[in-house]
Image 1 (cartoon, rainbow, N blue to C red):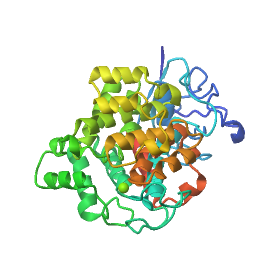
Image 2 (tube, helix red, strand yellow; image 1 turned 90 degrees about the vertical axis):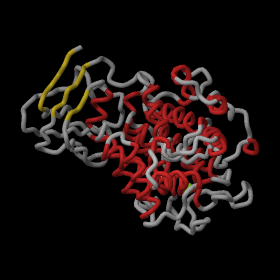
Image 3 (cartoon, rainbow, N blue to C red; image 1 turned 180 degrees about the vertical axis):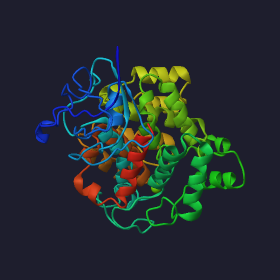
Image 4 (cartoon, rainbow, N blue to C red; image 1 turned 60 degrees about the vertical axis):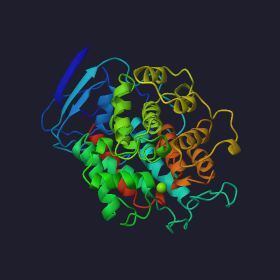
Length: 417
Ligand SMILES: [Mg+2]
């Protein structure tokens, strides 16, 4: 295994027509073909689209070091600025891309999928917000953003699911892994409206409010969530995306560690066995999809990562039943998009598992009604991880309120990797 350590200045095949650089299976991303000239102050312009350096390093099983990695730009822009002065350590470990990477459809890269997870969460939340608490079949089917709903939001505005995900993302990016910091940011949202789409906390689940009140009174965030089975709400799976985005590298080598962080992320507000198990399972599924594993493989009853997860710590039986495909042969009338974490996870997977597009998946989820915004948010994470941000309809991205907050959160999480 060769080790390359350079102050990079390389641009390979910079003269190539950008339109020809769409295929991520091109062999020159990393590996022996990567040319590093090692000339200090650099013309560090890597023009491969959609793949920031941190992603390149990860895909190449390498490590990128820099305190402020200049992760810039949008597709077709320069990724690295001149004078970036980074150290790039690439472990030339053979295959450029995972062998199970999909190369079809709308999925371009891990970064695209990481964006997809968080943006998908918010889009699903916003689509469902207008029909939250409505009975399935009692409202005109949702086909796009609409205003109204119990909180009187404008079209494209989102709710507590996205606010808490933004708070969690901000905490991880700013403070690393720190439950007290996560809890403090949830309190900022509840008490001051930070991370809210409109500057105020207009919706909060009962279990979350009670737990945050205990934290405000001085309780340890790690044990603030109610552990009672009847408190098994979906308030921690709805915000989970940042954990899988940030700790993606632990899949597949250490699913137990990834799952443990997901479990911890639930504890400040939801501490029942079902909630903890649901977070553990969902975090690994999201990481697998972001990594490019095929959906059928990830959701199969005998998925090896599921077996490892269950062996490391048994999943709660109701969650294990969902993980093994309880939803596969159910019709819409047999699944419920309620606030109960088992229902919510099952409904999101039911909407996602055979959908042909992000749109189909998320609309199937929110049109279940009931806790539609959260079913949409959980399904949006799954569909976003699988179809990527580029699989989200453009009009939904463009109409998403405060999208820049979500884009910035993904960028910051990736820089922290
Ligand atoms: Mg909500």
